[in-house]
Image (cartoon, rainbow, N blue to C red; front, top):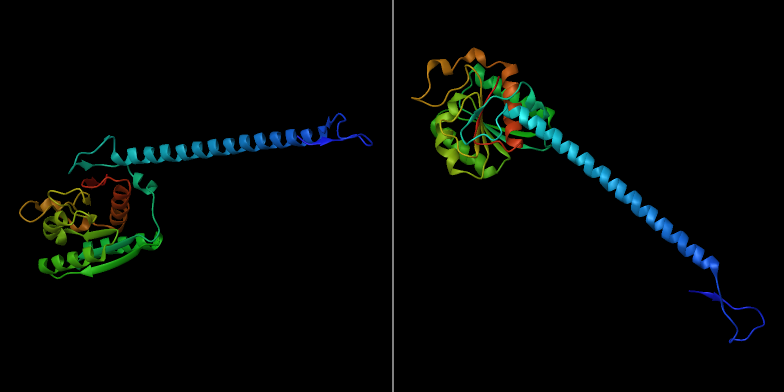
Length: 241
């Protein structure tokens, strides 16, 4: 502690404390305590806000699951209408789409994917195939490019996707307007009435109705499929209500 000597006295004289310096020290302590309280309050507010965001996302994810707590592998879920619109999105998402047909249902799905990409600033590459051999080649090309997601558009890709997707477990696959008969953990599908083809020799005529693939259904399919993957719900089939 600093001290002040009385004028005219020697070094042996009594030394008086300097209260001004002590006051400054106390003032500094108060300031420091106040700053700590403010910082703690701000941290608490941030934590509460983060918790609210997590809880809200859990609610939307629960609605998407349609009442199922944890879907089993290969399960089919029916999400609540429009629950998929609340899923988190990521700018710059990279997608490769593989198509094996140029019929109206397939072009409708492709248009929906392109519209979703424009809205969410995603990068989309479309690889067309003329037959199963070319679908296989396109899958190899897509996996080599290591995109965030490989999408199969429509029933024409199902047979080859069913064979090759299990061989590339590090790559996420999504089939729109059809489904794989035995999806692995990296394969997700979105289906609806008239667009639920499961593979050659397995499906019936009722599984494929070209008129069911409307722009609205296709838009919901890409949004629901991406939501399922973003929420970590893969290896399942999403059946649109």
